[in-house]
Length: 317
Image (cartoon, rainbow, N blue to C red; front, side):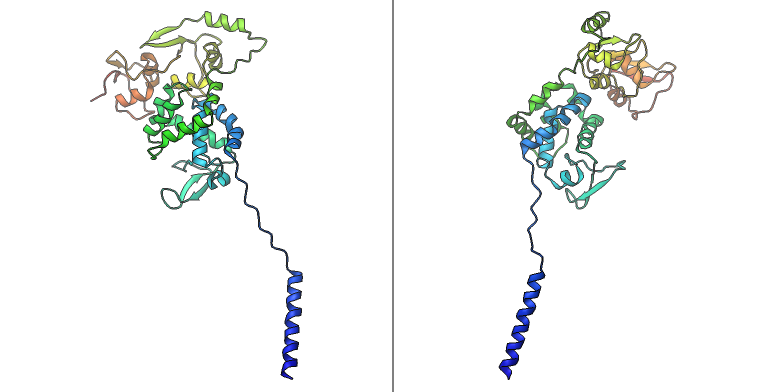
């Protein structure tokens, strides 16, 4: 009797197990997201890097090398889920989306972008707008070694080998070839503006020197683009060398420097006249605007009063 009951229970269990397994869904291992290779990263983003070189003056080789290093060839969680390839943190004033990750500290805020190109553009803006990187833009676009060492010197990264790592990435992957695209801007001439017209326009100008810097005076019909074309420069150079913004308008008679301004002038000081701004004085003497503010212990953006003495050579005591 006991044996019969045990046999019935065992049969019931076997039937039950058969039902369960017959209705169970097969378990399939989900494949891991494919990691892109370094070659694919370079091919995918080289045009974005070149585009930013033309706009900002940051060498494409440096941008690509930093992107490779900071994002793990585009495979880091921050790159994949936030499209942030340079580890740019939120900082004050950031109003866009963000992503939280443990980094130097726990649960740090990083910027999140809609496209990878926004990350490239933000990286360029970061370097252009921080005064500690100003000296880098006086280097040639093709001087990737100078840029790599300069970034480390300016405190971009704490790793003592950071410059060497960038240089190794650039040389091993031949990234410096992309810097050559930005040495001279594209010169696609319209029917109205032929090569002959360009030559005539350049010839009609007079290049002068002030504080050992080449400059020209704006004439009727000039635009930022036309000047950059005439002198085979990039637009960013015109803006950068003259402390201009993209929304600024040229006026006939304005001084436009074709080279970076200096840190000081041979003149000792300038007495402010009616209507003069700090940028006016900067252009008048060929001194970098930020250096002029620093010499006179003034906050960037503030303007002097009529009659103020603005020091041009030595720092105000």
